[in-house]
Image (tube, rainbow, N blue to C red; front, side, top):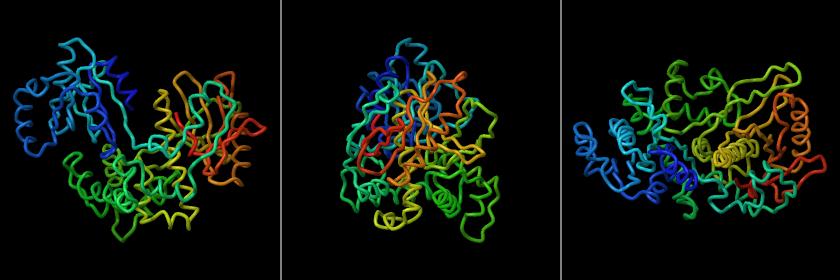
Length: 411
């Protein structure tokens, strides 16, 4: 994110860093800012709001880049930043941070051409120093074939990393403190955050039940009907209410579904277009399911689904660093790939997530089947095929498929 922020400041008048609370947005911005306006300061919030309503330019004055933290507390500042960027005609003027994606508002200018948006997620295993980074995703896209490495992460270590999550303040903390933070995050979301996103009061119990249902269906293509039926209790919740709640959770960056990939195929095959359910960090699902590292080790079915969600989180961060994105593939024949990493220049790689050695053989066969389905007259062949695992060693199979532990991967 440091590198992305530096590049954005060089090319844009302002940069908006969005993402979940506690992922380190303010701390990251402070490293680059020359001055700061902290809108959440309890002693000054009301004063800042009054000034913003009357003379917002006063709050925007200061050494640049100037940080405006949680700008949405006074939304008029967004248009003020856009105006100042136009007036000053210089890049690197402002950094805005916020845990809420602004809803469509006709009074807010889009900021196109003036404000670059960056999504910041929680820390990957490479950023928390739990992956040694011996296998580079970027190198695979560049044609690297000499893949080898040994992961420092044990199964016990992975279970702990899942339950702890990538929250910066949890990394390096005492185990009991680190594990408690995800539970505190869920409490904050259900009791406070989801109702402050747009001023609409929502039932905390319903929100928790919805999130718990999503946790039980993590890494699956569960549709709205499935989620609704799975919600606990006798309380009947309409699909419209669920959609409203899920939109609120998206706006505060709690859930982040994985979209489907629709490539050009050699033959007509129906591709399933449903997204896969994911939280922005797998520890949220762990907390909602009241799991612990020990319980994960005794429930490998749940562990496997959450492990997939962990891998998706890391792949998303690594792909974004290359100006790419991640999707999933699933067609009517049952052929699937848990992740398709695709870059803007057309390069792509297919990934299957499997925890153990026994599963890698079938996963590799499926990836080759997918490769053979692609119409290479209309799109590029894959840059790589990879089975992302929890095992110890990274290597290249005779069929060209890479087997890579998540504890060896980096961008």
